[in-house]
Image 1 (cartoon, rainbow, N blue to C red):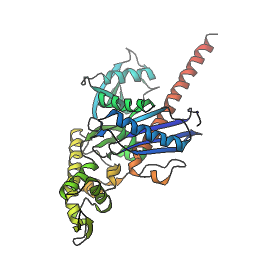
Image 2: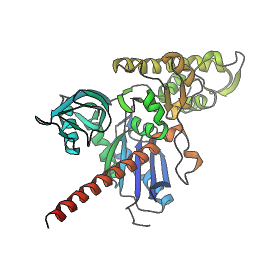
Image 3: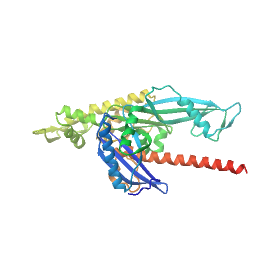
Image 4: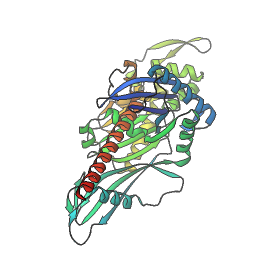
Length: 402
């Protein structure tokens, strides 16, 4: 296998249901699909690692599958982080620039962000992202990038996305045991947004809801910046479990029933519609009976989402509505329930297509993995730009000294 890693970007999405590894490379500034591996998850429970060895084996299997498809050895990856331990904090901080106005530098911006991030948090919380919402220069708000401007005081409104330190370390340990070094960690809802949201939606205000198996992560954007991140402890597996209990059938059969005939709105299902199932003997099942079980769970999910939005003071900030991603977004009727509960328009988030990407990946379930690729690419470009800028400054200083 090829050993060239310079232009390779690989991401690991460890979900409760599926473990995914997706690889792409940079060619003339654009991302090109190279390969992927998908394995049913093991050692995961309620969105968290419960058995390191089993989870690591699943990661290793998915990675080996991606390696065979991409024809390359994969040694490094970015990992996605999500689940009920996600918390978001909004804070503010600033610095004085001196008695006289002067030009704002990148170091000044970093100092203001460091001041804003210095808030008390539990010792087990790890910071995933520091996301400036706006900068305020001498009382003037609404500034996106103050570098080069002139002022005497710089403040920043900052959103801090945090996670459980032990949960993050467990994910990293699984990747390490599978032979992968972790380059960075990305909040999964932020990644899904990267692959599905337009610039206009981010500006007008939008909620990205990524419905996973055991939890659903959300991120709210307003005026182009992240305003709220959180997670609610309900996902697609809860819908399946409700069917299994309500209809007294095995989990695998309930999952098939949900995917083939499920609907989140009872009145959208014809009254007389029936199917024949083996449970274990042949019997008739009214499809409305399925919807009567799924609709309350769908409404409960969106209720918890609305409560999270209310706690984040962003419930009125959804000018562009709500975008649903993840496998759970494909349940018929989920958009209707979302619109009726939140009173905003809703759509299904289809991820952008990478060059040479198979059509099977153009699905809301892959929005997180594809978004992680895009996020990692943007991070790499930003770091390269900053390094080039620093080298240019050093060259100028060196030249001026002769």
